[in-house]
Image 1 (cartoon, helix red, strand yellow):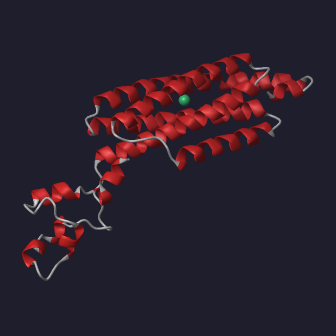
Image 2 (cartoon, rainbow, N blue to C red):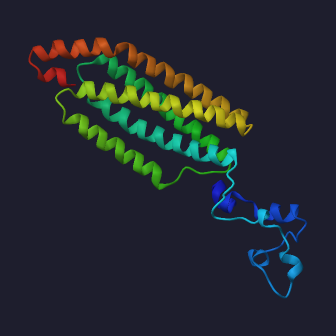
Image 3 (cartoon, rainbow, N blue to C red):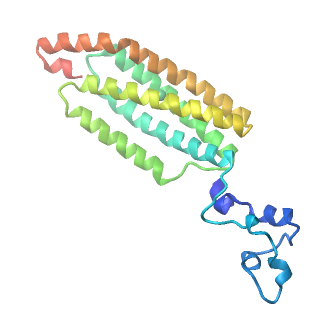
Length: 223
Ligand SMILES: [Fe+2]
């Protein structure tokens, strides 16, 4: 069960009623009004939960973003697996993607631990949708004559997306005063930054390798 399902509209009804010196057992019907018991409906409007002004705590955003990050890492795993399996003539890039695949699996595991420690779970449609989109991306690259270049570009862009994700998570974990989650996200951030930097430094050389191979038989250059 996630934070949203525990707190509809971001409001904890039980603690609201306690703070308002109402019967802690008061139900929604009590708040809605009852002509037989007018004293129980005298709460000021500002204490009532509404659809139009949800209150969302940093902790709830943190949970959403951790789940997004977990879905992202599952997507990365599919993308890295497909790309590294297919590369044949670019051993350095292949080895790097395989190494980052291992890191990515560990990152997903650490995120699951953070989510579970905070009372959430990682099941959901989003994870599946991410995997599907990674597979489609892989298929798109496969059809290109310059598959290796498409893979390198996708990975470089994806790593920067991950860097942004973990910078946001570090700040959110700070706000939520969750030092363990902050540490995990900061450690993962360093790995993503290192991978992004590695790819960035090698894009030029990789392009030249590809262009040289393309001049020869041609088919070796693709991947
Ligand atoms: Fe990554």
